[in-house]
Length: 472
View 1 (spheres, rainbow, N blue to C red):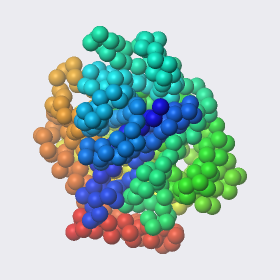
View 2: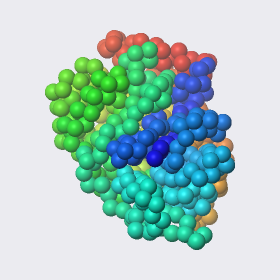
View 3: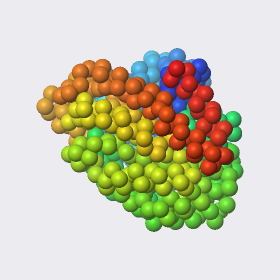
């Protein structure tokens, strides 16, 4: 069979979509690692596969030229309506094509299968898609014994029992990679400079032990973390560099520092392989289990970029909302300082519009954020994603105000807020970007960082050039 993966990237949907004059240069590279892994499994089973990243439904011709028998869609909530439209267009041209949708949104709302899809895969999809393909190829039509899927049977929605987590991720083949992924460019602050940078993602673990109310990961993966062997990840990273020239990789883990010993082991393996001389890598992290020796080992092994889950600097708010990722404000400040001192660029994921956040809370945060030792900031609006505790609570109380799934992109307010009117938080998000990047503190801090680490100078200069038109 021919199997096509379809993924509408979230590029141009974040911080700097409005920055710069070249629309195709988005603020970050977006790889659908889950879908890539599933395609690799299908390929391993003897199927011909390809991955497409259409920007709109008009690019359907490229998919039709591949002539797939089955298409796979991977969707976050803000991608699901696009997948539905694309799938409807595809089926209007090729009615017998089989369509399968998976990812965070279908796993939370399997009834999406009613909107023109033949199957929804719930949870991890590698084993599920293997069994599904076997059934389809053999001509069998009884799909009820496949765990972790949803489909219509005699017009009724049937959801099969939940599939168990994959306990040994090392059994999976390396994710499928093609030229469409490798050709993505970005204008975010990274290293090396853009003309030399080929960016991508690699997986070290799946899952997170936290239970943040806004997060839909526990619904998909539970709260258990499953790790890959550090030796295999280091070897795979080396292969990605040698085969594709990838020299800027990001760990697609929710929080790899929850097991610092594992991350230290990965750093040791990367140094042993000698890959730290050619590839720079980054990861997301909270603050609770970070140590100075870990930062030192990570940098020595090629790490130069950390996305910190700052999320909220109002201590009352983040305790109230149980994020519990910040041990204290002072500890956070100290870790950011130590990270920068170890030649690591710091980015902050920051959430505004928490359900109990007041205008005073936000104004205070807007004054503090530019003073923190950060080189980038990614402000988002609190969004209760389907599958999250917060979504379920707000749905029960009638607090959700938005039915357009495209708006669930963390850049729009989708619920009735006690302190902010519609449109206010969107304006505040833009204001935060301008205040942060336009502040004297930020320019002085980054100038000092580049003076201490001249290898970063070109990277910061091109980044400043990108955002200058927006700030002026």
